[in-house]
Image (cartoon, rainbow, N blue to C red; front, top):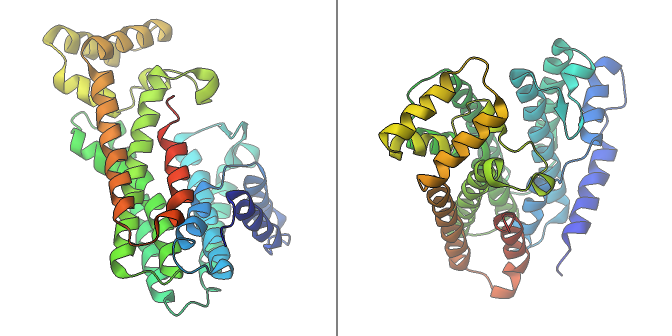
Length: 325
């Protein structure tokens, strides 16, 4: 039986509603309820169900694993917002803005503990493998965040360094979610490995597309300020590629804009976008992104299950890879 993503989302929302977090002290638990209530697409937890449906469906265990992943993801958002001093999350005040930094830290910690408690409810005989994937993913996401913070003040960052950082910060959570779903479906080790690599490559393409859309996207479709990465001098694939491949004059202009103290942001975005375009960095970025997506699709073809079972996962990959259109 194929269950729709809409049904998966309902299962996740029901599990969130059943969480025992409506208790004292309110200052600890209310921020958890708040961040879980302000939305999000629940894409990562849905991947657990979608991957599981490729093999043997185990809805009950998947529901706990999906909840754990969603709680972990929101834990990272609470703490990331503190580190980034971000005022908004999903169009609403961030936890530390609505309460304070100490409350944000402590409620984030509590959310992580609650996430691990959900994993403990899984009855699968392969629970140890689930813990291994969850723990490895969790620490890698933290490593990626630290690298990202390091690079903010590090002059020399290579393209390979950046790609490894986004693999850790973004791609491994997609990949880990898929692998957990496959394990809960009693997939073979080979299929678990393939679906993990599929998710990793999909995640890499997704983040590179985010970099691209930040410069070249339609603001109404993208949902974010266009040129935000340029304004903040964020080291993205486009900027690092331009610093590596642009001609001498363009590199000098880039350096001037990056080091400018109080630039005209509109002029800065326009000038750097023009450098990217005339240097071919836009096309280079699209090629790199599509290389990852193509590798993901090739890996999906190698997973040993009947083709008709792959339709939901292909639809999900299409949803991510076609945001640019």
